[in-house]
Length: 161
Image 1: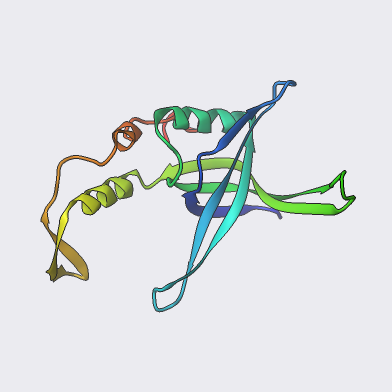
Image 2 (image 1 turned 135 degrees about the horizontal axis):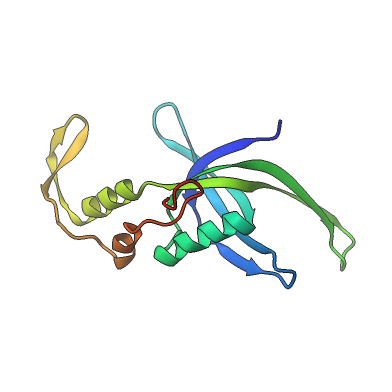
């Protein structure tokens, strides 16, 4: 069975393409972070992903509401391998990627909390339950995109992400 589930952060803004035959394709990479047992970050794995037609449409509607780069995404799909020959050199190439069947954008509340924390002043001496205590918490966000992201974008099941 060729099924993959990944949860990570979208890298650069997805690339949306329309073809003359009416097909639609979106491509982007998802960053997956590996961590050590002691909590230190080891490495980031970049997973190329692509989606077609109905998934393209859903993702495009989400992009129209807010930027997608950096957003946490949960993807279900399968691995596909493309092979091609470079016409100029005759060299064979292959690429493994995830073909997306469904997705869910996650982490809006986390993104809002992170933006507030970046704006807040931290009291370096005050720690509660392993987390810093902030001197003040602003009631605004850093960007209009974050406010716009609160608006819902369509999902497969219920027209919201």
